[in-house]
Length: 91
Image (tube, rainbow, N blue to C red):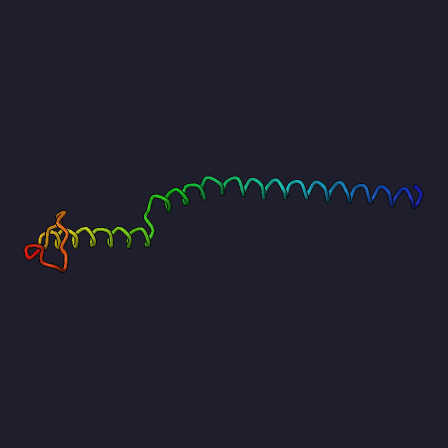
């Protein structure tokens, strides 16, 4: 065999082995990524179901405002009467 044919054979074998290794590595990483998909989806759905701290704080504040409104309505009920600064009976 000539030197050129030996170099060509060696280069083609190296290329074939390199391609084989690269393809197998790519497939393994893609499979790992696909396995993580459902896991990440489940985590995202669980996080969505749980209320965030801000939502909990907003609900607590809303309940507090409703209680205050009820308390103030007991003290001074709302009606459609308009209170003016002048006495209407003197007119």
